[in-house]
Image (spheres, rainbow, N blue to C red):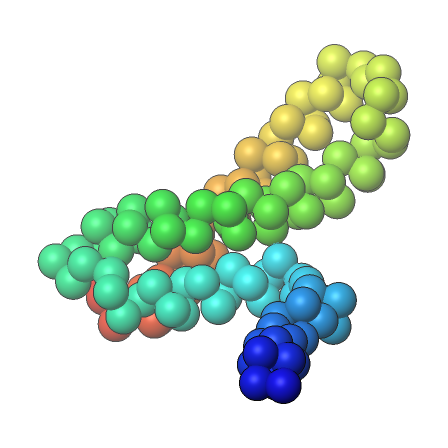
Amino acid sequence: MKPLAALASIGLLLAPLAAAPAQASDPEPVVRLNACLSAGAAGAPRDSLLSAVVALRTLCYAQIKRVLKTRLEAIDARFGPPDAILTPAEADARAEARTAETRRFNDEIAVTISNLTGLTR
């Protein structure tokens, strides 16, 4: 009877872990990025904002990549389907829009890190 009771208690302990992936929905990428930056800010280097930005961008690389991909997909959608043939002017406009969005996003990350760490230039 004792081995059966031990097995049942192990099953009860593991049940929440087995059910967790099905219950927990993946938060949107921006929420995950903000959580990563907030969590990493406490351990970020304090000697300069640049070193803190480099450290947190490295720590949160996967989340940054997901958010940037989402933002760039929205820009690409304005220029048609992914396999659309663009004129040179349209291709240049899309490239400029993608570059501008990437820079804007990088600036937002730096400002967020500055706010979280209290560091300035």
